[in-house]
Length: 276
Image 1: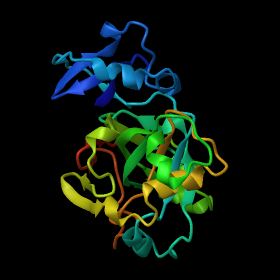
Image 2 (image 1 turned 60 degrees about the vertical axis):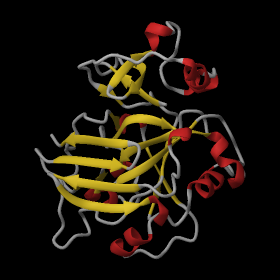
Image 3 (image 1 turned 60 degrees about the horizontal axis):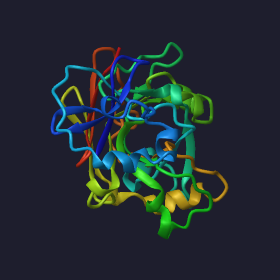
Image 4 (image 1 turned 90 degrees about the horizontal axis):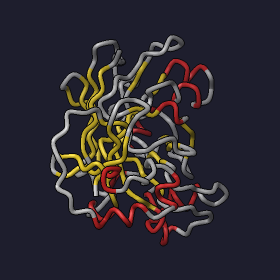
């Protein structure tokens, strides 16, 4: 299944994406909650598997496929080629940081330039969405806790990221985590550790990697995080980016108003955001 949220900002409804058409889940299940913690806790992911509605064409905005997760946990330097281009040592354990939920935006919403930073960069990432609560999850059982996958652009304010000596603020500006276009359930992805990731800026390929090149794979990441941090349904884990970000190019290439950034993950989809 490909879960979406559609409608104006703040008025999104849960739906399914069916070959270019939208199934309005609230028309079928009037009491279905938004796609958030309660949606997963109450078993709606299983209930909507029965839906056979082919959907209909709608000219409507797609929102972020998740509503207000409790946390967005990200990985730094989780691809060897990105580690090399940035000049850092290979991490001995997953390097974690957080983005805040205000950073989430729809798959085709604008990325808004901040006032406090003028070095704005892109990072295509495979996002993992947690489907059930868990703590101290063994790696061998990690996939049982995953609801699905999505595309996330870990937009980064480099000037603030580096000057603050920590990454929280420069990663959490409004709209700095466009995500979508859908939440794709696990059964739709044959091999999540062998997916091509691509970024284009104004049509030019900037990143071209594969999730097979992660230093720490997804089960290892989930096990590491959940040792002492409870994962809740709807939580997002963004698993790192391959090489090709703008700040480490010679000369650096950074985003400006009018640029169009397209981030794609194979078998999941493409998000496309204009910088404003």
